[in-house]
Image (tube, rainbow, N blue to C red):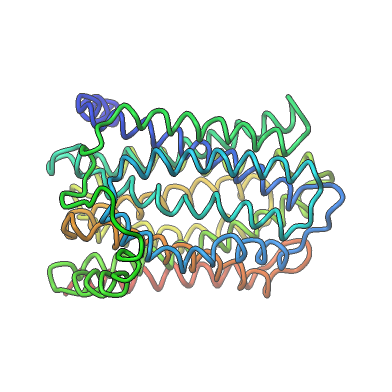
Amino acid sequence: MAVVRDLRVLLRFQGFRRLLAVRLLSQGADGVFQVALAAYVVFSPERQTSAAAIASAMAVLLLPYSVVGPFAGVLLDRWRRRQVFLYGNLLRALMASVTAVLILGGVPDWLLFVSALCVTGVNRFVLAGLSAALPRVVDADRLVIANSLSPTAGTLAATAGGGLAFVVRLVVADSDAAVVLVGAALYLCAALASLRMAKELLGPARALVHPRLTAALTGTARGLKEGLLHLAAPPRREAAWALAAMSLMRFCYGAVLVLLLMLCRYALTSTTDEGLALLGLALGASGAGFFAAAVMTPWAVGRLGPGRWIVVCAASAAVLVPALGLPFATGPLLAGAFVLGLTTQGAKIATDTVVQSTVEDDYRGRIFSLYDVLFNVAFVGAAAVAALMLPPDGRSVPLVVTIAVIYGAVAVAMARFERH
């Protein structure tokens, strides 16, 4: 099997193996934490959740870090990335433990969200650093394969973490706080795994080991301007188009996620436990789509190029989302989750490859942090639109059609860019 052979080749690189271990543990912990938070906010029996409440929670958790994101990029281009993984995961382990205590204490939602914000805020640094560090541990000829397998493996780890959270929640302990503590333990393991790499291994090449924070913050505006100018230059115009396309596809994915949460909570199940179990199946189907994307994307990019593969992914979603979504039935929706996992992850792998292969190393931290900001804004925007369009049970034909139209527009725009 080609994907197994490619993975064996990549695993010969010691730096790649160790960076992958950090990614798997870190994103696995993310999956546990996110499912625990979703279960507490959406599936608690005493709560009557609405699409507006889900959108508000997403806004509280993600929008503030759309402001922090650019600062993260400038700092990532100054700090040793290995140290970001070490101290970032240690901090997340601590704050996840605090979140568990707050859940047990039954505190107001706003206080819980503040604690969760600290966990997701550090996540901006860790995920952007993982993407920016990847070219430091594999050679240029294997970058596409590494981009196919490494982020996809991380996404699968997050899905597995979500599955672990469901198991703990439904089988071991009926407590969201216990699930959050499992996530905290995984964050601690990720921090310890980062110690297996030398401080200098992951770059950046001109890092200041102990930069003054005031100097870093003062240079943020200048650094961002330089990063945007670097991205706007003709050799990197394809990266700019790919980022725009991926942001719109992320918008669609976010809208479908809110729709799916509401359907699992109200329309397709009769109890909260059944809804949580169905959501777990849907996330598992999406994870299978991520794996399929990892298998297919290297072959597809090799024959079509990354830009045309994004076109294929967006066009496929435009056709299949209404076909599978409009029946509002369990079987088609699970198939749709698989399709969205495949197309979204396939486009993301292609986008990561374009950005990494066209953006110089000294700018990658800034560009990937901006990439992260676009993801957050698109996701929150999707939740807000879904909140306006969704009825109480989640069945909305106009929302499904709107998502399909956006996917189609992305496919047409990217196809025109590729022709020119």
